[in-house]
Amino acid sequence: MVLTCIGTLGAILLLRGPTPSAPPTISWLGFPSVIDSLSCLDADRCVVVGAEGVDSGGGPPVAFVTTDGGTTWNLSDLPKSLGDATMTAVSCPTTTECLGLDSRGVLLVSSDGGLRWQVQAKRVQGLDTAISAIHSVQCLSPERCLALTGAGALRLTTDAGARWRTVALPTPGFIKFDTGLTEFDCPTASECVSVGSGETPNGGTELTLFSSFDGGGTWQAFHLTTDLLGFPAPAVTCPTAEYCMVVAYKGDLANLVLVASSLAFDGTAWSMGSPSASSRY
Image 1: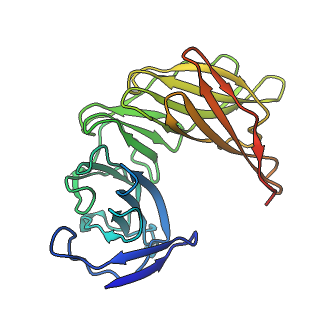
Image 2: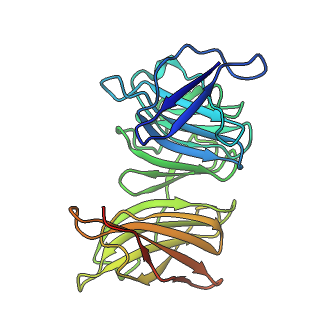
């Protein structure tokens, strides 16, 4: 049996009925109105988490797994104790092991690639458990993961999520007003890039860029002067350790333009390519 589900962003999900080999049997007739996080180990296997959006708290949470590049999806089995929370972050460092966080800071783990989940900790040491506190998470190995809070702070665990500590970032020195980090990406198990934005003393905009070469334990700040970021919400993705793409909005709230630019690392410093802007919308 195949059910076609349409998400709020117009994405079509094909939900394949359970087969005896792997997926759990779950009764569910809704669709995800909120998609919060995506983790793809390769081109075929991905896990999506979010919420149905029907409860007062936005939940109940939902998770899906695809093993064929998104053609078909299986609904995951989540603990009933999560209630009306939403799943806000997921990362799968291997084909079997996944780590997830819900909007109350509950830590969940899966040992079958995201099909079945169990609560590992209801109160995670070192993580802010406020609603929607965790913006994203990325695991560099089953034990080592980085999490970004909604306030723009980085947290690091080296024991599979049992304990987390705040990662200290160097003060760039050229920023008058820092908005905090808005995204990070780790293309390898040791190399990571994080970005934010800030205002310079003369009213301009700086791209706050940090690099880590030890799996997120320590970071270096880089100075990139640009008029790319008129709105403090940059996102970054890094296919390799030497090449990234950063995307942000420019303009006022009534007339925003989506702008993208490449970032290149030569082993010593980062440089920014010429920005390209989309049409206004």
